[in-house]
Length: 162
Image (cartoon, rainbow, N blue to C red):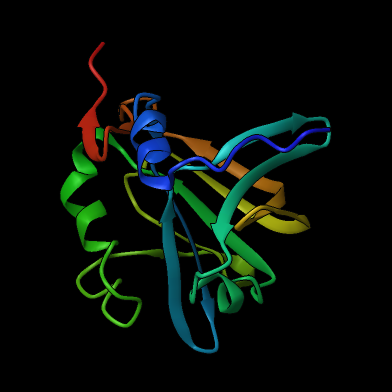
């Protein structure tokens, strides 16, 4: 297979920004503190077995520690969460300051009032360019039908309009 020519990463990021995605927080308690990070790479993979995935940059300083948790929580942020999402983009040492989280059995942490939550366990990982794609087995989940999702599009957060 012929390798395509190297593309400018900033131009590619701009083009990818035309595709809206949801915004999810993956979080857990690790070594006595709440750790987590936002991602817009959350996606369903399989219903049988129930699997979801997220991608993490090799440069992430949070994922190597967060990946040690037995169970993790994934919260799909709601349309009213743009301000909370901005807070969750802070450096990891300040990320959860003033943010309420709900602790679940096995170290998983989720946000109250999220559009949906998933309790997951690590299943497998694959290397993919400058990222690792992590697959998770879903062990529990819930959805709040009253909350519409927060959408990330062209580098900013948006509410999804009906």
